[in-house]
Amino acid sequence: MARSPKQAAAADTARKWLTPAQLEAWQALTLMLARLPTALEAQLQRDSQLSYIEYYALAALSERPDRTMRMSELAVLTNAELSRLSHLITRLQKRGLVRREPDLNDRRYTNAVLTDAGYDVVVAAAPGHVAAVRELVIDALDDTALAALRNSAERVNARIDDPRHTFSRDATAITDSSTES
Image (cartoon, rainbow, N blue to C red; front, side, top):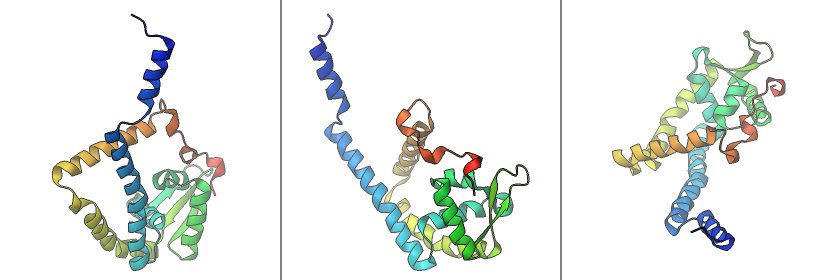
């Protein structure tokens, strides 16, 4: 027996809303997503005079061969638009923590390079940041919960990266070399 248009519309509407359990999980996640970066930034600012994004940009560069990364790749990794990342790199350059140079493999691109001073700053900041991450997240979870968190985060990230999910397409994913500075 086929459903009437009214029944189909009612079923479709019911499916769009979150159940109470789904809503509670979503609200807990969004609260954590809002509060955790703020807490981590407070520790970084207090102990290292770095913002959250500055630390993550410096840390990402410190882990790369020659401490070098294309600006477009760094923008994706830090979830920053190229224009925002360009301003960030300018601030870090003024502090002597990074420098810019043309990509020798493709001069249309610009690389961010971590200086020795920048490396020293991120190495000095890392223990306090790791302690904050451990205190706020890692130590709050047992091994099972930590594995579930990792699995859940990987699954959500995979959906965000999947082009079939139209809500995940975002300007930060655009890495056109013509917009690099």
